[in-house]
Length: 508
Image (spheres, rainbow, N blue to C red):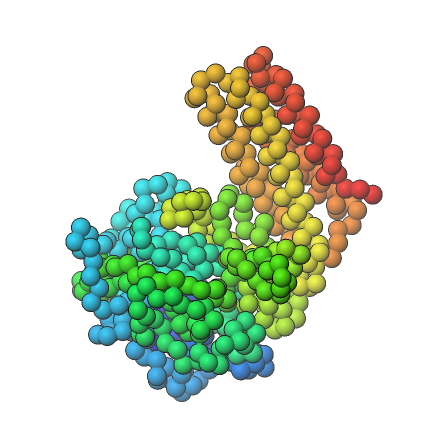
């Protein structure tokens, strides 16, 4: 299967489920919504479509970008763009199979690896939060295999100890822009050459680079991020995989289509070190500044989901530049470009990633995929957005401080270890419940964000959040309210709660 010519994109359109080709999509012949059993696979499919399109087409500037966005391209233009890159996207190519390496030498203890290892979170027994149909990764068709290979290389933790993650780290957050249909969505997530030049000044020198599974690197090599071009970075494969021959006329356990199905693959570690950081188009970054040179970024990292905090807590960092004295952050490059293309029009964001619990970076604890809608003029309301988010997070912090004030004192009188653990678990669970209870409030206000809230709106928001915090505090501590040994701890924690709530009340 070649991703440039085959019908591999799984879509649902007007109630019909089918697979279409990239040419049909970009030439406006077919459309629909990406449709797969898992949200992470759908996001990976969309990312892959954007990556391939970015590699094939590089609009010179904003004007050409808008032309691609408004009008489907012709079949001739598509075929010309594909002509010298066909070998890059053939899943079964004899020398350069897509996202794979030939002549992989697996370990003697594991010569065959099941396909479910390519579906993040399916085969890990620790991931009880996942709901996966039994046998989801038993055998994958060519389409699902290509998407899974790309997803593992770009978004998920490695398949095991000693295997390295992507340029963005183990579990990066991906930010994409959603438009009216799939074709326009793809183009809104393509950088123009002008935009690429801003984030990769070395772009001109790396235009002709090939993916590392085509133009191979030497193991153990130190790679300078400032020498990695757009195509090589988007299609970087950090591990050596090689598919075993597929079985014919079999049903894919993921999408349900019948055809060639892969049931196992070989894997081999590939060691390399990256010097610097590569500015991925779909990721916001955070960084510190060099003490001597305030414009030089050091310790650059990509945003990840490491706590139960939902995506809206990161939203301002996804959209706006932050430059304090010691640290800062940059939005995803596609967001920066969108500000000039959309001119403040309503914005729909697709945000996705995996949650992990440090330091266990290889263990996924949840999938986090959300859609956000922002009203017209969103790009001018940075102050209002930051204030809303900081206010909502501030009330969560008050709840956390009060509960842990109670926990630290109550544990002294809790008796058995079982009671101590139970107190800690009940209180820590309230943080996740707070986010659940406030999700609708924050989303509704973000969707209609303004430069500043009116005094009455601000007061209403604070009252809503305050009521939720008090309710959750009472819910967490109620089982201990009748125990004499706990009364002092509870009284002191309640005092802490109301003290910090009073500090958050709007002034004036």
